[in-house]
Amino acid sequence: MNPRTDKLVRRTTMVATVTASYFLLTADYGPEPNVLDPIKNAILSAEHSLKESIFGPKKGVQERETEKLAPSSSEKHQKSGG
Image (cartoon, rainbow, N blue to C red; front, side, top):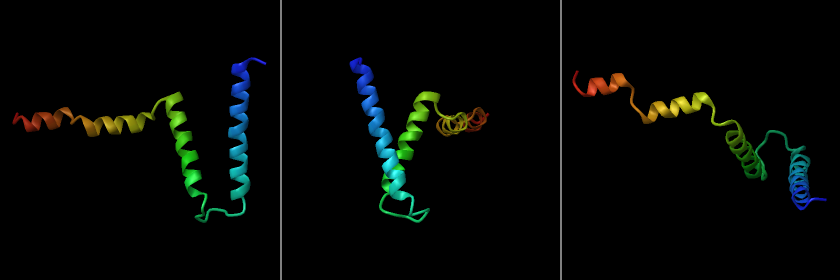
């Protein structure tokens, strides 16, 4: 097998094993807080980061952050006194 393909298969297998283990360990706990919450948060964070890197940031979030950083033209106009 190609070394790059072999490496990809190994990494995919490791991620699948960790994910399956997580779900098997947390199956009995339900929504109650438990010791594995930091792992869950890390997985959700990684998922969010991966989605952002592939699809880009959500348009609504990007627009809100842009509005916070740059004041609107009416605010600029009011500050200049005109």
